[in-house]
Image (tube, rainbow, N blue to C red):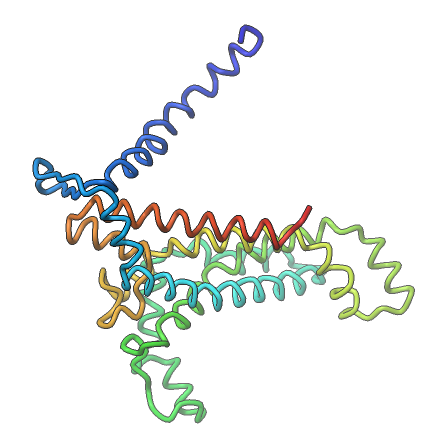
Length: 288
């Protein structure tokens, strides 16, 4: 303790902040799961035991929201990382102006989510230019009111988020490509390997760590999607809950219905789902 005295002094601010804004809220949330508690009338708090947990496990809307977000993220992860890998591979081959392309491809990441959803909502609307173009090309027989559809909102949101966030995958994968020894490519070229063969047998295998990292982070962040759906569909996630996400449902219970005890339970159930999926990824995705 005497040898590391100053080390403990320097980490103390972080420990205090974490205890106040991380550990204490977590413990309080777990405590509130055993109560029917509303911040509107805290004096009427009633102990319900495991009632909130039983209700959450049997809540069809909660499981519907989980299905919605998994449906969305399956499309989003494929598009985002596929586009990021493609642009990284192209920029890696660029000899001049690489800094310009890195800036351009990363710019959507810096765009405000609210601004993006407002613009995209207009572009993809039945009277917007995207659907007008598809109708003129004969790919659509008539404009589609996709926000009222049962299955279209999540794929459309996945496309929008892929455009906004593919720059993160692009930067990480490009850094991974630059870390590969150039002599490996030179040796493969001398042996007659084509550009595609070099990418398939050299680049992709050595990008395993970066791809694994992106998949883990995408699953953790994706299951917490909130702003895009809230801005476009409101707190209910659409008329038929077709765009409802777990965090949106938690928000609805906490602040629209003032049911903090049940919202805390749903939050911890979501945390358990995220933890389980993360553990499975580490178990089966990468053995090193």
